Length: 334
Ligand code: BTN
Image (cartoon, rainbow, N blue to C red):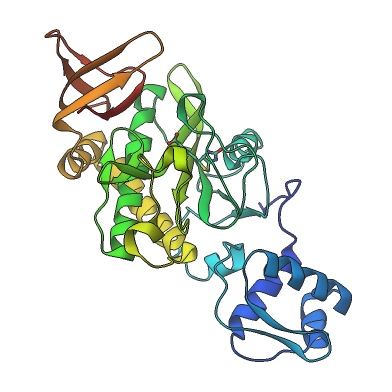
């Protein structure tokens, strides 16, 4: 089955233009040659080059002299990503958008259309990025990663939280490899440096009582934000702020998809215990952490007491009861 189209996806010829420019970084290529190779007019090449410039791709030149880029562009275009990915199911199909409401919405629609396991949806910008608990996920152009992976795990809906933990573990590994810094995992879906969040995961699913049809694992990462808006500065950060240099989004996505493939296989081969054990080992939130949980009707403090086999977090509340956290947002208590 070949990849179908979806309204708004990036024109395949823009994808080809980006790949062509990347292959010829530092070399001047004539507008006529580009036009011939990707099958458009020279006028269209010029228009698309302008569009790429607006996204921060540094292209020198103009139609008469030819075009030249200084380095491989950090645009999450399918051809650029695919040539860096290892063979596997995750990332075999990539849907790319310059602008979309939410990659999770697209992935859920693709799930409905029988799109295969491992399909990836990526956007350079989201106009209606969603976070957990009805929050908005601020998704400004090109600085972040806004991506959703469609998975078809042979699991029951009760095991879905384990998929979020699996994705978090993969992301942690990718960031550690890329930056040398070790992020913390805050159950169930945040990656932090200290107390500041730079990555969140939103897992949505379509399931029946005992079987998941598909899940959309949405991942948002603050990558090259130079500063965080005032209201969020105390609780959020970006990779650029933490490492003091710009980071390649392409590298991070490639590493993430590779680690997601191997953690997902670990989960299927060895079962939930392998994921729970690994999460418990690397997350400071799994055990002995003072936390505050805020749910719809209540807010309480307690101390974490490890994960259940389903991936739920046990908390010994200050009133003495030990219960799994069913709903709510969790933060470290003062
Ligand atoms: C959270 O921490 O609340 C989860 C944030 C998830 C944001 C990502 S960005 C890509 C995907 N599309 C969305 O609309 N949301 C997720």
